[in-house]
Image (cartoon, rainbow, N blue to C red; front, side, top):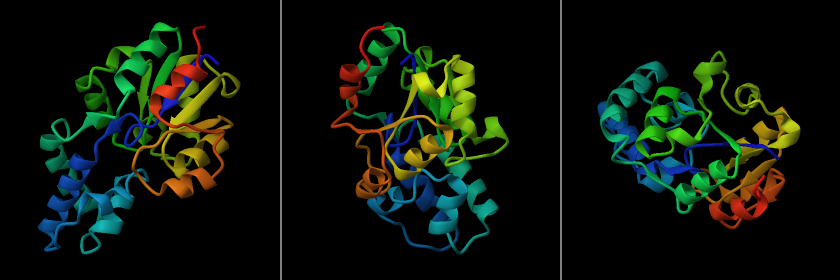
Amino acid sequence: MRAALFDFDGTLADSFPAIAASTNHARAAYGLPPLPEGRVRRYVGHGLDHLMAALVPAAPVADAVAVYRRHHEAVMESGTRLMPGVADTILELARRGYRLGVCSNKRVEFTRRLVDALGLGPHFGCVLGPDDVGGRAKPDPAMLLEGLSRLGATAADAVYVGDMDIDVRTGAAAGVPVWLVPGGAGAWDEAVAAGPARVLADFAELLDLLPPR
């Protein structure tokens, strides 16, 4: 194993407060009442179009997306924090010589800003989103395959770390084993039922599975 790719929302970072705030801002713009964060997070991970279509049904998707993004600029950094164990684990994996990258359905400019704001930027060789692969979001494997290419790795010597069933399906399509970590987006039982290669107890367990190279 020489490389590890990571999902962002629910895997590296708890961004649900910011996502819920922007979702509810978009809902308010169309006369809809706010939703609790727990309900919003069930729809995270499939891309913003999906989130808006599901939770702001009164609006044209493109219009709701525009309202969401304008609001998100102001709240995404204050409403996002690293998941437990992520900072130390990523630092140590980089020190051990692993090539690291991020593949997320989040708008890539937002992901890159957050990765830098959270202090992880120097450790990642690439941070990718659908915009980098012609708009093809997960579960399309294009993003993972592009990540492998940029890291100089292959599916045989890499792993994808995520928290949802969509991550498992994306890894299967790319031929990359997926390790699940508990995060919070989507249903955990559905993610486990999707058939990941491993189910981890916590993020720091990666240090036991990826020894010094």
